Image (tube, rainbow, N blue to C red):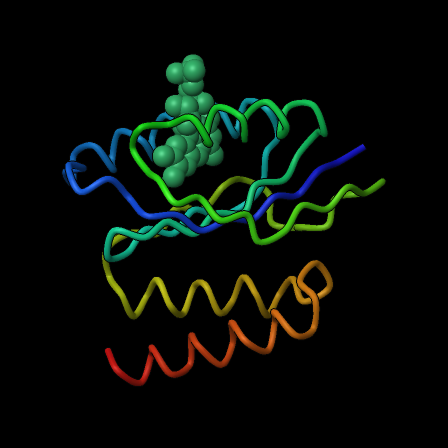
Amino acid sequence: MFLTICYISNASEKLTDQDIETLLLDAKVFNNQNNISGILIYSDFTFFQVIEGEYNIIKSLFERIEQDYRHYNILKILEIKSEKKEYHKYNTNFITHNKKKANQELLKVIENNQHIFSQKLHNFIVYQSKSLMSIY
Ligand SMILES: Cc1cc2nc3c(=O)[nH]c(=O)nc-3n(C[C@H](O)[C@H](O)[C@H](O)COP(=O)(O)O)c2cc1C
């Protein structure tokens, strides 16, 4: 059984670039060792993350993520249980800082994984991302 969780959150104001780098590196090591796929995007003190993997591994990882002092206002957007992997990219990708790149990457994630997002949410996020991309 697999589990896919997607959420957004606000990064702690105290986080430095170095803290973000450390966070991404640690997460990458754990995720790759545990066959977790997904993406983590950081831009403007906001995180967007999709994590997918074996049910119990993702359940306990998300419990740790929820308790993590490095972010707050964690808003879970979706939680899907499935027999097969829904999110096809292997490895967790990490995108930071460059707003335009972050938006493009977010758009790509949503577009490539339409089936895991409801149609309404999908349309909303695509619309928001496109309008953000035209601003930056
Ligand atoms: C926004 C955010 C995303 C995170 N994503 C992951 C992740 O994908 N994989 C991971 O192992 N840790 C991730 N972490 C770190 C975990 O919250 C936690 O520090 C890590 O699992 C180690 O837990 P422990 O200190 O209880 O051993 C993330 C933290 C934050 C703030």
